[in-house]
Image (tube, rainbow, N blue to C red; front, side, top):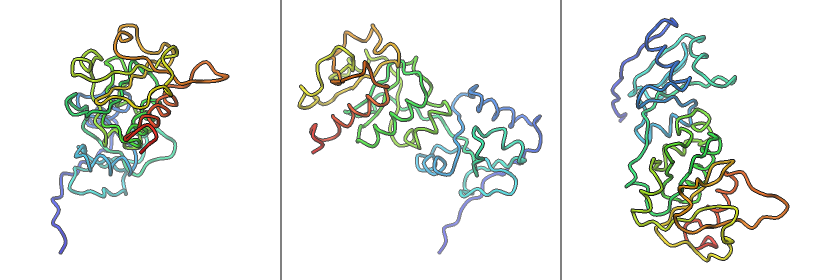
Length: 252
């Protein structure tokens, strides 16, 4: 027997002068209305739905909302294209609720990003944190926005699956986490058999590294490199997260 679905409201937009369209276009440009953002593509819609983050589904004329229990906004093809960020037009765009988590929900094995500015790096770090069974990610308040379109797309849905909070590193320190700072002059990570739970791995800004105000917390770690001065923060983060993934440092 089929489950009965409640068909929610359907709004049709045919003009750039429409107030709803103007609000949606502001979201695309990053002038986000408090609590909302746009995510493109079926995969992100599916993940947003699983986390109950969907406010409405945007489709072009002739398109279909696969989840009719959610509000539908139908736009003329030209208007729908204006809301998309890529030449390859998605079948649908999801209007989502912002999903910053409380610090209390991030768990015992977390990543802290200190003023990371590249949205692609942020999205990639979220994906690898999820892949290696970290329990949460915390962003400094001067980090790139989680809701930057490039961060959303490069996360491949991870932002809906792993708790992401905002806080100062001092707040994490007060909660009793063992803090490990990734720097160029720290102790070789190979000298650490494991990290003590609960722990927080800190990764700094792409150009300047961990900020001076945070260098007084915890122990410094480095990757033993050859023939190169430094690594991209997303690459370095992936190496450290694999090295200290769930279980012992050999991945057991």
